[in-house]
Length: 179
Image (cartoon, rainbow, N blue to C red; front, side, top):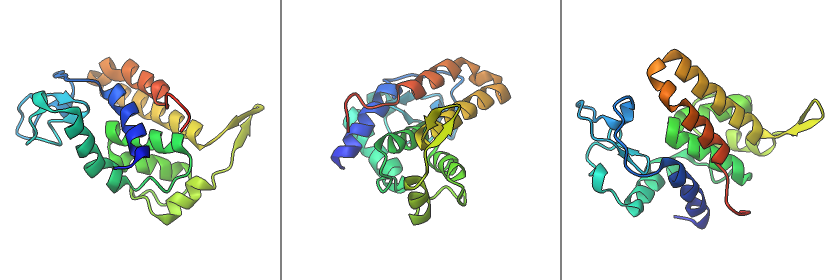
């Protein structure tokens, strides 16, 4: 693990919080249908062999490193705030979905895999001025996250209970100090 990963995962873990077992959250169910829950963002749906209730933060950090951070291949992106948002959205929505969102914004093939083209285009993305206000790629990515969550809640009413929390999460996805 790297010091930069440690900074990012600390932000993600604040958003994820501790143990919860909400019946409307499909991530709380194992593939065989048992309601087990989620702790620190480690969901029974994706980690059915983990002891969710007794999961430690260190174990959660390791799982996020191995199954999210490393496969997402985001450390080549130079904007630390963008890396944080892509990682956080990957944890909450899914790795490939987060990466495809980024790829659509930078106008490259949305295959859900970050390679040199996606990295280059993200790093070279120009600042855009709208009504006198500058917008960078992080601004567009944050907006795309909001649109995704609002659309999800509209399509699947059982998720409306989570919408306010998802939108608050986007606002709170930032470093406590300068990276």
